[in-house]
Structure formats: structure tokens, C-alpha cells
Length: 104
Image (cartoon, rainbow, N blue to C red; front, top):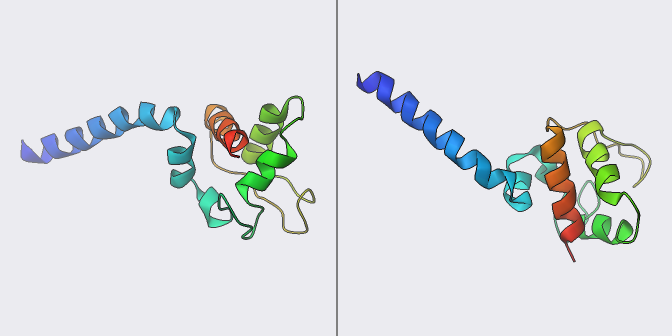
């Protein structure tokens, strides 16, 4: 019985945590491989997320464009190192894009 309860409890916790991540871009960012190449304040492999926010600040459709770049990857926009596609859903890409654009 114990062997069955522990996995069920873990699964319940995972489902309970998912809605919290769905509305928190920073928490979602920390669970994805984005942090391997990006930081909020300074350039690493990729640009600082605040640089991205500044570049797209007054661009129509910025959230959709950025979400597409996050999901499908992009090359040549920020230099020679391409950003690979990320294993995110369209909803997660939108949450991440909106969060990045909110950074000042």
C-alpha cells in the first residue's frame, strides 16, 4: 500500500504545482533550459533578457514574435550563435514571452 501511496502523492504535488508555474514566468523560466544561456541582467551565451525586453518594447506583436522565437528557435538576430528550439508548449512560450517583455 505504501508503495502505491508515495507515487500518488508525488503525482498530486506535481499537478498542484503546475497552475502556479502557469502564471509565473520567472518560475517557469527556472524550470526550462533558458537559464543555461540567458540571465536577466547580463549577456551570457545569449542576450540579457532585459536587453530583449528593451529591443521589443514598442514593437507591435512582440509577445507573439518572441513566443515563436522561444518555441521554434532563431538564428542571426543576436549574433552568430543560434538559439535552438525549446521544449515548451505554445502556452508556456507565451507566458515566458510576456514575462520577458515585462522586465525593465
